[in-house]
Amino acid sequence: MSRCLRAILLAALAALAASAKHEDKGKGGVQGCQANKDQADCNAASECIWVRDSKCIKPAGCMVNTDQSACETATDCKWEGDKCFKAVPPAVGDKPKEEERPKDCAAMVCSNGGVCYVNPLGSPPTRCNCTGTGFCGPKCGKQLSECQRQRDEKNEMGQAADMAGRAGRDLERAKAKCTDEAKKMLCPAGVGPNSRTCVEAISDCFITGGSFNATLMERYKKAKDAKCPGEGQKYCGQEDVCIGRGASCAPQTKCPDSKAYRCADWKCAADESKCDEGARPVACPDGQMRCPDGLCYEASGGGGLKECAKQGVQWEGCPPGKMECTNGKPGMCADSVDACNAKVGCVAPLVACGFERDATSGRPLFGDDGKPQVKCVAPDSCPGGKARPPQREKKLFDPSQGGKVEVKTEDGSRPAMALKIGRGGFKTASGGAINFTIDSVPDSLVQEGAFGAYFDSGALLSSLIKIDPGAAVEVEGMMELDIPLLDASTEDPAICEKVLAQSQMISTGDITNITDGIDPAVPCSKGELGACSCAINITHFSTYGVVDKVVAYEESQIITSASSTPATPPGGAQANDTDDSLSNAALTSSSPVFHCLLFSSITVLLTSRMVQL
Image (cartoon, rainbow, N blue to C red; front, side):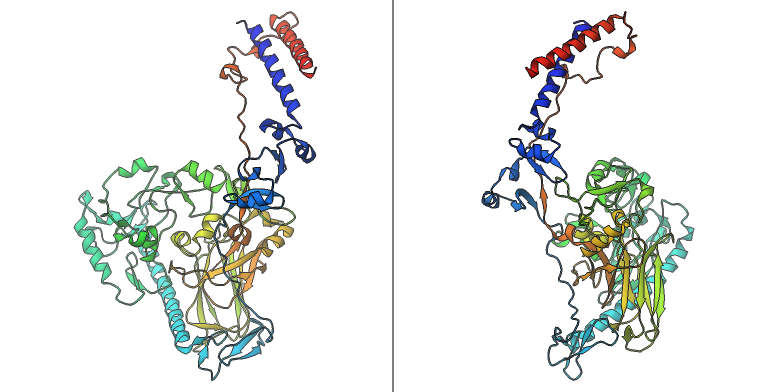
């Protein structure tokens, strides 16, 4: 077939397709529905419906049910407004109760003979006097023995945090010799020839003579199990100390971007195929798994990685079989770069920086898949940063004076949190000043602990902040915690106000106890850190984070439309897949190509006219 004849036929077919598409507008069919860019045209067309984000679709699945009763009897369908959607369950599930803070004694109910009084320090507004009742607690609802047990636990946690801090500083000094960036872990004492040497992962400490020494590993495990007899204590191998509940040992370091994949022995590689290079430990026995300390533990009850965190063995970055998604929040993991792009919702190198939000309500916009739409920006265009974990800091507070501490991120570039304590804001058994320790949380405890579902769903709008007083305290007055939100949309003051109205601060008493749940939540007020922050008056000290209630607790809907297949040119050729580019010819009035194109144009006009007739 000559090039001229071929061009004429292609032009005629294109004209027919264009005319058909034009005729489809205002009519039904997949292509016809999509052609309607105006809601009135869409509503007038057969088999078409207008859905959120200004789209006209031909419905499928739940959306074919135009009657509410038919929708509600269909499987996994829910009637919302005037349409039937496939319902997506809440990302987290049941939301925690909001903390009760009665503003006057008429609303305050004290138990067991306690007497309500208005708190002269203002926060909380009312309190119960439990004197002489034999009970204790905010509402005189606890046995005295229970309150004593809780005080003992808080004292232990304060001491453990202080011990972990000192041990961490000693470890950093010991690691000064670890100049190789790929080897920042320190072998514990008592592992034979590798004691106190720098390695990539603790499992390397059991490699002797170029092969894995299982006897050495078992000997170390027995010695470790006998190290800390105290209840709730755990042994930190790198630091060579025992610490109590509430504190964390130094975690396994995260993998670098150049070797982002975590192997089964907790070392890093470019991908899974590179994990078999070099000396490696033998696989753990059936029913066991290797944790970052190089040892095998019973994965009891299908606990998996939770068992590592439960044993007090933590990590930064990702567990084995995963890589960290550099376009998402720190600690977000997936199987591959493509899986990361899908999970995060942004194609690298763009990064997630909060949600696309409705300008009127501040609510996240949801995609057709029922997931909130992520705001994707260049790495240097995320104003609040992807995360703001605080650098570890200790601050002495005198209850008679109060005070304020503002802690910045590790690099000192941004505020991570602020704590403001009023005069008389707390009391201790000694009545004197005590240290408060502010710290970040290892990725393992974010992933596997009480905040895990909030983190996975994207509902967690802040980094986690861990606060440990050096001894048990009772909050009696103003104690304000302020945490910045990590969502680019909240740079707009109006959006910030709306997002804060639908957000709350949640907490858990002991972040290292991965079976602990979430404590009662507190609604956010506008804070003073950065463009948008959540401030609350706290009544206890624990680990805190800010969550979006819409993402965490509300159902979302999936929009299901009939699929459409893009038309393929005859022979499967694309528009630019011709034998020779016509543009390479000189288009002069005497050129054969010019005459061919002129005739093709006339053919297009005639074809279009015939279709209209």
